[in-house]
Amino acid sequence: MGRGWTKPGQDVRRAQLLEAAIEVFGKKGFYGATTAEIAQVAGLSSRMVFFYFNSKKELYREALQACTRDLMEAITRGMPPPDDIRTFFKMTTRNFIVFLKENSLEVKLLLQSLDALEDPDIRGDMTKIMEDYHLYIFSFLEAARERGTIHEDVIIETATLFILGLVYVISYAEFLDLPWFGKEDEYTFTIGDYFIDAIMMHKA
Image (cartoon, rainbow, N blue to C red):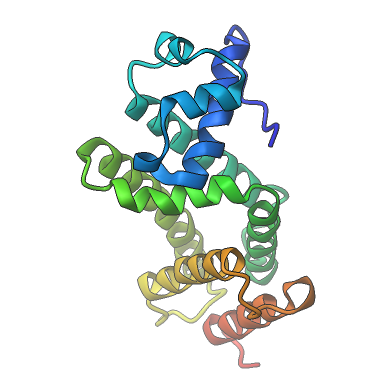
């Protein structure tokens, strides 16, 4: 992956463990992974895991946050002016697909976190992540409605849930090798066009 999570002053070994954790947790989930496996992938001894992290759960939670930051940075990269909603939707979708293909284990980690929701801390983390994604999309659509770019009677909550749902469908289709999206994901963008045409002021 080589995402480069090392910050100024941060120990390189800590970043190695975090990257290894994303790989192992992405493949096996929270309960299926072990700290010994993570240390082995990182090329470090098992005791180093607990030198940098208090517990397996703390490492998992930091891995979740790292994946979330990477995904949001990728999605928002090169965003158009806020009044260009059609380009916004297409670029957001394209950026997500590129991120999914290049960093599938990070997306898998986020999806597989469902198996750990019984833990209140992890549940809280995932709730915050989903709320942030929801707010990002909701705020953009709400601002577009206020500018008159989309129909004033569009239910923003419904439109937001449609986009979030599409993200999950794209993710699972990719992981299951389902032939639902054509060359260069043309079907995905066609779906996006239908959606935009439905909420914009003019009819297609």
